[in-house]
Each structure stands twice: as C-alpha cells, then as structure tokens.
Amino acid sequence: MGLQDSLLLIRHPWVERISRELASGEGVRVGFVEQLERFYELLNQTVMTGDTAWLDAILYDWGHSSTETNLEEADYNVSFVVNRMIALTIEVAREHLNEKDALDFLAAVIPVFAHSLSVVVRYEMETRVAHISNELGQVQDKLQQLDRHKSNFISVAAHELKTPLTLIEGYTAMMADTVEQSGQSQIQTLLKGVDTGIHRLRHIIDDMIDVSMIDNNLLTLNFQPLWVTHLLDLLKNELSKTVAERRQTLVIHSFEGDDLLIYGDSERIYQALYNVVTNAIKYTPDKGTITINGRLLPGFVEIVITDTGIGISPEHQAIIFEKFGQLGRADLHSSGRTKFKGGGPGLGLPITRGIIEAHGGTIWVESKGYDEVKLNGSTFHILLPTRTEASDPNIAKIFGKIETVKPESETEISVKENPPTNNSPA
Ligand code: ADP
Image 1 (tube, protein in one colour):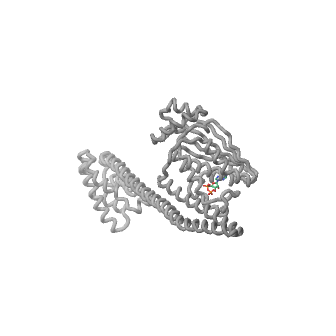
Image 2: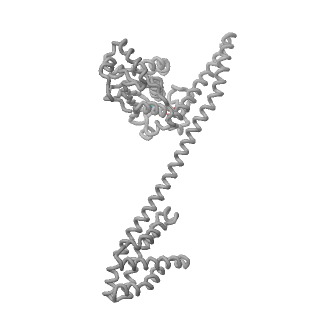
Image 3: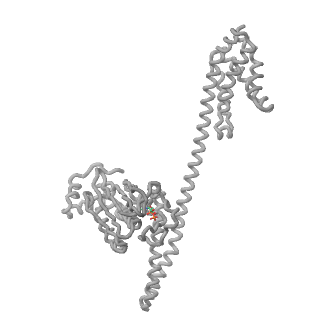
C-alpha cells in the first residue's frame, strides 16, 4: 500500500482514538475532533509536500491556546497532548496496517510530529514567559506606586506639621520674652522644656522632608570648597557638652586627606557626619569612646567613625540605611537625641546615605554584632570623592584666590598648580 493510502486509511481511527483518549467530556470532544481533523489534513499535506509550513498556523493556535488557569498553574497542556499523540499514532498504525506499511507510515509522520512538538513547546514557553513578565511588571508598578504614595505622604505630612509648629514656636518665644521681663524663673524653666520639645520636633520634620527629597531625587547640593578637618572641628565643638554629660571620650585624629581641599556641600556633609557621630554617642554606654580617623585613598577621603558601643547585628546592618528601618523597635524610641539607646524614627542613616551618595561617595558599617555586655562596637566608613573641580566656574574663581592666601597647606597649592583632569567620580 502506498503512503497516501495508509494516510487515508488511518485518518478515521486516528481521529477517533485520539479524541477518545485525550478529550474529556462530550463538549470538549466535538471541538477537539474538528481540531484533530484539521491537524490530520495539514499533516497529510506536510507529508506529501515535505513542507512543514502547512502546520504552522494550527501549531501557532495550539501553542497560544493556554488559558489563564493553565498559565497560573504552569500546565503545559498542549505539548502533553502532542506528546501523547505520537504514542497513540504508533499504536493506531500497528493496529490498522501491516508491518511494512506501518513502518513506512511512521517513518513519514514521526518527523512531522517531532517538529510539531518542538514548535508547540516553544510557543507554550513564549506564552508563559510573556505571562510571567507581565505579572512581574504589574507587581513592580504596584510597588513603585506604593513607594510613591508613601513618599508623598511623608512629604505632605511633614509640610503640614511645619505650619502649626511655627505658630507654637512663635508663641513660645513671645511667652519667654514676657516671662523674662516679669522674672518668673519657674515658668522660664518650663518654657525651656517646651523649647527643647519644639527643637526636637522641628528636627524630625526636617528629617522627614530630607528623606522625601532624597527619595524623589530632589536633593540639591550646594558645592563649595571644604576641608574635612574643619567639619570635624565644628562637630567636636558642638558635641563636646553632650560627650562630657555622658562621660564619654571623643578622639579626633588628624589624618592624611583631612586638610585636602575638596568640593562638596559642607552643610550636608556636616549633617551626615553629625548623624553618624550622634548615633555613636547614643549607642555607646557612658564612659565609652568614640574615635574619628581616616585616610586618603585614590580619588577618595575615607572617614572612619568607631565606637565602643552595643554594636549592630548582621541582619540589622542590612536595614539601618533603609528609611524607617528601626521602626519595629518601639521600645527604644526616646525623646532624648543623645540618650543611651534612644532610638528615633530611623531617618538619620537613610538621610546620611542619601547625602553621601549624592556626592558620589558611599557609606557602610562594620560590627562584630550586637552585644550589650561585650560591647563589640561599630565602625562606620564614609568615602567622599576628592572632587577638586567646582561645577560652578564662579566658585572656581573665588577658590583660586583662596588658594593664594592660604599658603600653609601644600595640598591646596598643588591642586592649583596641577589641576587634576578627572579624578572625581560623577
Ligand atoms: P534612629 O533615629 O533610630 O537613631 P538612624 O537611622 O540614625 O535612626 O539609625 C538606625 C538604627 O541603626 C538605630 O536605631 C540603631 O539601632 C542602629 N545604629 C546606628 N548607629 C549605631 C551605632 N553606632 N551603634 C549601634 N547601633 C547603631
């Protein structure tokens, strides 16, 4: 028997057998039979012409026929059906043809089935990948939206809180003036307490605004020439009283690079250093030591702040630079800004990181872990780019004059004589 005759003979039993085995339910079977008839017809054409393109359209339809449920449950329905079809075709051929005709028939159709299977698998995979990336995209959009809402909320709340705070501040100042004139010292003391509260509240609100600016890339830096050593001196002056109250020692070493003239927003860098050092004070018991040291690296000044405090566990190290990373520890929240373990809203380090990163620098922490008895301590490292070119040419002009009148620093002069080409990371 010729191949064409075998194809004709097998057609009916093939459709009947496959629909019986693979379609469950009468309703499904009717549609399925039509599909099988169409497939067999195209299989026939492919075998006769040797051109698999005949099958492309139906394989495309099958490969893309996965339902939402199939996709969610990762069911590879169609490739399973085509796979079973191959086995059933062999059985049908065996039952309805003699050995030689069956062999001829299978030799002709099996390669077509193999081709069909690979095409269907590919289409099914493509559909699934598209489904997954679509789902991922939706989740990502949702997360971004949530983050935007959160950031907007922080910003709106902070600005709303600022208005009544300014009123309270004004009235308290007026009351303080009146009380001072009338000499009521007891009320003066009470007013001082109110004033401290107001300052703390203002600080928190400012932090909330800073965090939302950093989140929305709105932090603008006012680049000016600065010396790290000046900022550290200022810090020492501002914190000496607090350090004395806590009977701690603050040691600031001088190091290579601390007198190098670099460009940065000195107010913001001061704020960043202030946050790290006040944390070191807060999380170190009375009589502990806070040490500031550093070194000059190629392209960077490194500032290292070490304390002999309670340390930070590895899990905690991973989240302290995230905003509100500390919120879970309500037990630690305190009204004192430098009180031992007086946790705040957890905005200090996220702001610090935002400031340092906006300068093109980086910050990280090292600690052997949290232990209030062993006092492992923590070490914060800050890398600041040694940016020696001002982005604003007017500042560069002024800077030129500053250099000539400050001859005691060799580094500054060398900056002028050999203007560095490009050693500042963006
Ligand atoms: P907070 O307002 O809570 O101080 P920060 O962002 O400044 O927020 O710090 C986040 C958390 O990181 C702190 O609550 C504290 O648990 C931990 N931390 C920061 N600095 C230190 C340090 N030097 N030693 C131990 N823990 C620290």
